[in-house]
Length: 125
Image 1 (cartoon, one colour):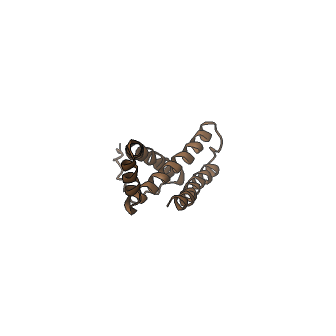
Image 2 (cartoon, rainbow, N blue to C red):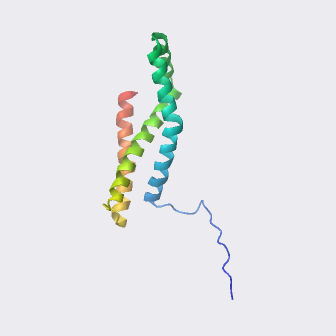
Image 3 (cartoon, helix red, strand yellow):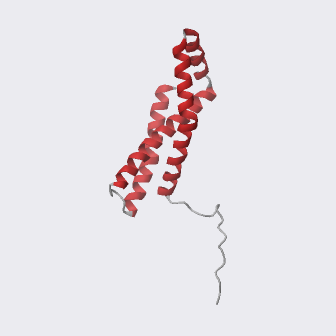
């Protein structure tokens, strides 16, 4: 009797399908929003509402290039999380759970979230 040995999985060679990538990015964006976005937004709101000097300091900090990139990343995380969440709600209602539809909606989530990030980022930059 031949025993099957555990298979070595080379993670760099595994090709992740598009719906899997959207699912992982949905989780990553949620963690990023929870750990970075909420505390940063609450700190900025509290500091800017405390006094005029606080508002000026938040405006100066938000004007730096690095912070703008962080805020742009958080904007993408929010928009991706929103679009993917809508997609997952539709999948829970058995809308678009066929293979081809699932692939096209996952590609649409990536495209729509990136396009909305570019549009809103350009307006806010």
